[in-house]
Length: 317
Length: 256
Image (cartoon, rainbow over all chains, first blue to last red; front, side):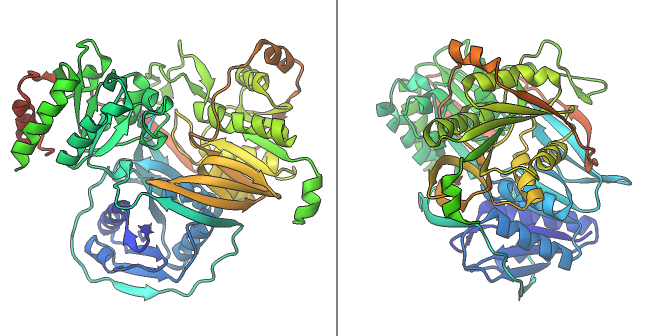
């Protein structure tokens, strides 16, 4: 089975999710005696990097425009046809999400988004598992159509360096006319996006006000984590809404989630309970979050967090 | 499309609303884990559709004089949610009468309804809180070959175009897109509204048209549901002894 995988980048630097997707796709291709072809749109600093994650072939599409789900999905469809690919893999990050459904509909493919399993092959189709009911359950789906599209959940499959020396080919393809024009892009430079973070330090109303966030900032700096917050905190503008994790915010699955002063409402848990390890710091021993936690500290966060920060500094030194 | 002529006509906005279990609903399955157990479950309008797509649609109705239609794919039991939408605003609603099977099914139903209609904007919530696919809006755009922008956190109408902020990892993109287009809405686009008594009374007299569904083919089939493995229980650490927590995270959990 030949597989086409989309490798996204930001200003010439591959996203972490690009390596994850390529690594995933190459594992599937390998176990099915197929070729894993990675597709890059635009100028990359180092496209050969993808062969390290198992791509057999790298297609570079000359493109100087900005991201457009319509253009990208058309290009991927055309290349999937040229490469005789049966499966197209994208990441379930914000660009990938907006490509997957479009591509599936244009290409006539069956699709499943937010996949958290390796595929399993049956006579009548390919099974994949995804989270449903906002991470409160899983569903196994069988894609029965010959053409298939999946988006793979960020942070679900760590990229594996396997080494390789794939050919890089520049492809000749006509870019379809677009009715979308990107006027400007604002991005906080050098910041790891929440869905890609390995360690997340998150605060709730227990912090009592935005002026106390330095406690979490210090902790995040020490441990190399990214800041997040609960919905009430974003709703009262203590923190920006792009830090809100939960059912109606960003869904994350870091290795380590440290929840400080968050009671753990079911809507919050829906956004974080796929984290590998959860630490809850809360003064209320009855906080529902403890039921979903691996480690708990019942105590005053204003004392516990600086103490944890010092202990971490000592350990990391 | 001639933009000038367009400005003289009334903007047509369609907001697609779906039904989902309440955010606090118990999640359980029946029929050998192949059906969601709806017993005792309260259903609501999908929050992303209601808080962001629907309310922005109502604001366009109020500010730009847009003609606003709500569109739902579902059985008659969805009417209660459609009436709630009409109590918040809108001119009319359409329900495509079927029990939706999949994202593809819903997208095909919506696309086949829209294909001979005139509209400037179709708004969706960024995803539903039950199947979390983020797919339906994109699929409709794919079927109808219309521009699609996902996760828009701001939408303004300017000289026949929509100016959007689209969420990207760690930032935003500002985008101009010509009508007609398909947009999915994320947090920030609008604020939740609670229907008032006048709205609820008016909703009863607004038209709710029921249209038959089309046949769709199944490309994807549910095999089974499962529940996550429960955590074995929290290990409590003495708040005075954070060295112990650090040791556990390092030696036991191996995450630092």
